[in-house]
Image 1 (tube, rainbow, N blue to C red):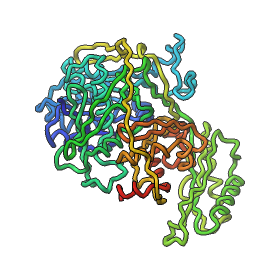
Image 2: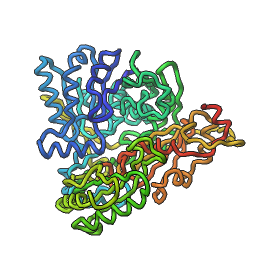
Image 3: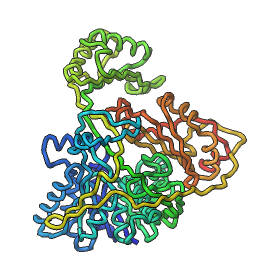
Image 4: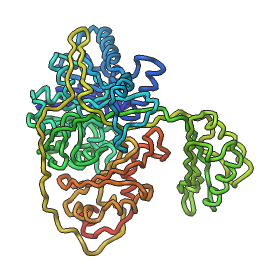
Length: 583
């Protein structure tokens, strides 16, 4: 097997993690995920200000810390920290190597950047298809457009002798599947093996989320003050064991692995550029302390298209928050709303978008000033920055003239630029991967998968009878865990049970209509529901709840990270027989 360690789950993750993984125990490959849809927008802004700098600088810093040790131990490094400038990222790593007196072979993989090609593609009659509408993506002034590449460019770079491989926008799992496929010598149509590696990559790509971070039952996990990063031991058939270095904080359990498997997914057929991984075929088992085996994952031929992540400037936004304290909250909110627009130089219908809400964070008989306070929240968006700036006047005139206890919590100042995200599809044959060794070879790897369709039927499971009998009204989180996240303007909510009986109850009672009752914000939205009894889980995709993506969302939690915990806090009538298993 090959031991593949993770040292980053996002741009800004723990800087010392690379050193911890390289020095904490034996590993064969060090990987890290730096990219997200929002990150690509951030890097585009950086690149616009400083051309050639659209990559994750923290990765270069980590390489300075561990490069010598990695070369001494033969540890391969694979990272998507190249972002929008993988070539310049590779050159920055090479500069570090020269300073350290080292001579690694450094390669980069690009070809994902479609921004310079958009006009050429349109003129050739090629449209990028919007994932949500099914029609061509809107003709916006895009500042980034990147296809999600797969693992085979990474494999080629390693075959060419690279010690360090830097990529642009690959899938998060590709940086793990690549070293696994290279190590084991898999063919491109070894669907099951690749599917297993993708499952392992999906588990460890978010770093400490696999070892207890963001876990619903976190109080059961030791050492959360300094959670360790995960390792995937990937075997020749694609099965894997998820683990971590001894003595590090957190834990690897069936629960933590299940939770991460549910993160930011849609249907159980998890689509990717290299394979469609059937998450409804795998089994999980606890092999020992901090060792969870993922076995039996089946794979199908991937789609003939690649996903494209696209960002455009959406204009400017201003957020205003006014405190509503004590009694008569609704009346105070109504007065603030009326007075604000009476003082502002523009009416609500003069803006492209206006979002208003009253957030009831106040308590009955409050024991502190903060506990007595609710919020009136306003977000306006418009292409005209001057209009969004003008709201400061409306805010100022309220100070002494409206509600008792008046004070502002935020906003009314300069408008902030925001981005709009679009997910699209493009034919894979139009996006080859370019593999370059610094100072050496260059080659092209096609992104088209081999021919030959495969169809996998999910195994059938005999579930326990749905529990009945006496019930008690308690929070859903008493027996259910969750994991949620953003996918463009959509959010996914994965819910998992920890016993067959609890899953049977959940599967029978948690419909899309019931979910709408638990989450009123989703009442008018399209919701998809998927069953994965093999890992005792349901997954819901809530379309449009994040509007135009993370940067544009007017929700307080624009990334839907807490959506699952809100769900767990809702009360339901749960059979007492299930409660006795968990309390």
